[in-house]
Length: 268
Length: 356
Ligand SMILES: Nc1ncnc2c1ncn2[C@@H]1O[C@H](COP(=O)(O)OP(=O)(O)OP(=O)(O)O)[C@@H](O)[C@H]1O
Ligand SMILES: [Mg+2]
Image (cartoon, rainbow over all chains, first blue to last red; front, side):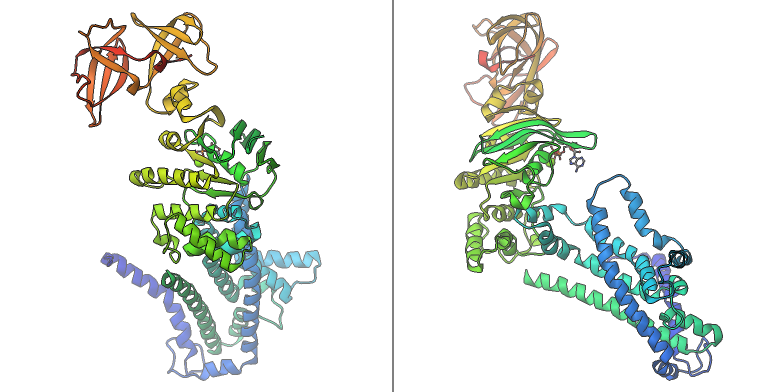
């Protein structure tokens, strides 16, 4: 069972992890400072700015706005992304690879470009949704759906289509076969994709910058706007809550997934 | 009308033709095999009958009903896949119950039928297991039980033995045949293994490149193959090149080197005087004698290789510039030959088949 990892690799891996985790540590510690300003290392530790965040109308409403937006985005992205992944996996036609690349393009294009393009489109088309939650929602869906397509596509790649065919010839309609056979077998991919969509939407900045309305800003925009004028640690405190939310949702998914595995093993 | 009828069925995938102008009639209760090399269109044929693939042209009738346009769930056909396709997230019980649940049977009846099916395939006690906890042979049994429990009109098997090891394969061959016989279900079996097809089938259709080359009983296919391709694909064969020296109805005289031997024409084949032909003789149909025997030999050769295999001894015989494989039962009353022995080569007139 024990696998020996060569020492240089181990050192590199640890350094890599530290490099990735250090900014998070900076934010968390900066948010716990007693000082007046956003500094690192912090001047002493206290919950002063955490409490200030919890009492700040501006940050709390931004936090819950982001939360609501991320949930809404998650629902639509999960449905659209799963449908698109199924279509890409099941149909055979020329240009399928191109369509796949097109679906995934929002992730590869710079967010600024996607945000600006949508903004310009909403204005030019006169739909009246520029700088409203609806326009913002559409932008976030566009940006999160590729993650769902990716994870669901990966689980469909290992899903054996003959399972579905077996169900069909045993008398199941296409819908029944999907619900009873395909869905349970790709559920983990869908779950992972929806959590990705949630996190991506919650942390989205560039698209939000162009599309959010001044009176209802998502958390990253609120933090950015606040930090532009005063360098106060409550932005970092808001960061702590954002990080906690993301970690909690990841842990929760892991738990759900593992519990299911565990149940299956014990049944057998 | 036969129980299953394919009428001028063809299937094109883009520019490539997977199945071309297929006509098949399969009788009720028959064990019918589709036999052919990889990529010849066997699975496509089966999948058209199951409803997973739409034919490009033609119609399929089952029990007098046109099923060509029906979706799989409306066809009442059971299929066992090469990889068994056991639902991995369900127990053996739920797998077998699946078709019954879809038919909305009451729970008590489902339990009773699943138990009976488990008993029939010898898997009682395994109902709580998952796919990953089953061996290949056990998956096979579950897959078959899952299909038989819904009592379909037709059973389709797509290379069901190819994932098993040799010993299991031998065992399951007879087991499947026995179950099929006792249930009496019309069965279509896809394989590229000629020994499976010969052992199990009532009739075999030999396919190549999307076309049926010959349909017949195992005996007909083996002993009267319609072409060199079939002769070489089914069993081991010697094809000796020769020239037709006389034709008398279905009996031909063939000159091989200095010797003249007889063979017969099969199927609709015809030949003419002085035509180059091949003469098919199966290795086990040939007899050898040491050259000093009393008989006047027509054909003589030299032993160039001897292969001892226990129950049989195989000899490679050099006849002029051609090779002949001969298989002789290992019995004390039959001569044992050595390398470089000169031998006389015989076979019964009906054992030689002339191939144009
Ligand atoms: N969905 C498909 N799209 C395109 N071509 C296909 C498709 N299915 C089968 N073919 C082609 O049709 C031909 C026949 O395939 P089929 O699977 O019926 O062969 P087979 O006789 O079952 O072979 P094997 O013994 O390897 O399973 C092959 O050339 C194959 O590449
Ligand atoms: Mg096949």
